[in-house]
Length: 300
Image 1 (tube, rainbow, N blue to C red):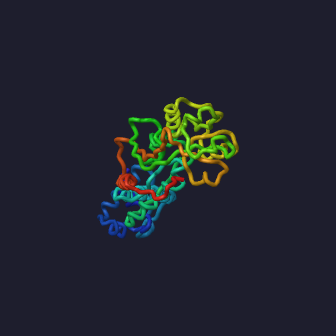
Image 2: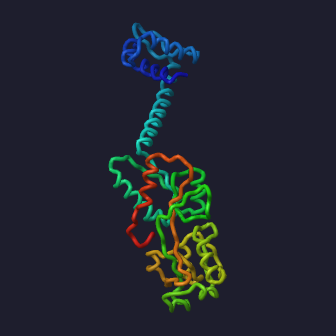
């Protein structure tokens, strides 16, 4: 079925006159007549019938017109969206973990819009609240263009670019024996009950590595996904934990100790698929993110 013939059909249906429709379409009347006849032959249904010097739609023509207009409108919208994407406009699909979705990623998004006032930019956020492993899986499934998360294992398919860092601290209940100190060596915490991150968390490998350097993995009663939940459990005396330094910790009933050995640091990354085509807008966004300076001390 010829796309031009469908557009000819819509024009004739609205003008109800071959000569007027041919003039508006900038084609000859015989060409228009041939196009409509070809369409009717292909469908094996009469779309028009004569009404004096004009033509009007048959009942089947009216049904066909409604469906064709919807299809053409959707097609034109899709074409326009692709043209916008090709010219550096459009929507960026972003996956991110909650801690980066609270402030860092929104700040980056806002800064990119301000840096490109001539562009029509929109965003869709995915996976906020999920673990880094889940975010990376979504990236592999092409649910979004880029992801902001911890590094969840080295992967030959994923390109990781470090975009931010966050200090780790030891959180202890206020009445805990270690609360008398301001700094701590992790080897001095091995005899105490810990609360650990879930194995799927991007932090788990980092913390396991720190304890391995400190002499061993301590006993732990729980494995939790969310850092805020871990902090809450610490404040209620369920154990101690190595967690990210966050502003909100100062408002909770716990004490944080600076870890001096081994010195810990958590890195965050912008992740994207290797050897993949990206729309011009996404390419610009990725380059902007590489040099973006986040002004707050705290990621969250």
